[in-house]
Image (cartoon, rainbow, N blue to C red; front, side, top):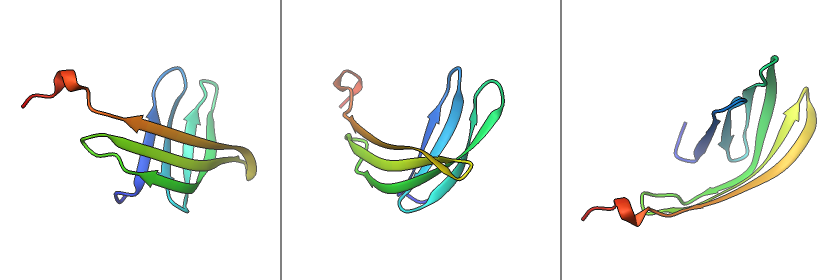
Length: 88
């Protein structure tokens, strides 16, 4: 993957890994606890300005299950460094 690709990993009762790349679709497997569910994540747009100093991530995407649109979602995430751990 290149720098414009973002992978989001969720770990917990339901584990999944979503891959976002502008204008592309990726197959993801969601472990539901009962059976694995295959989903297609289609990224409509992604803007990633996150660096070591902080930044913002905006993702607009759809999820398809068995070829049918299941949902359209948008993620907006802002991050900044924790000044308590910065050493000069």
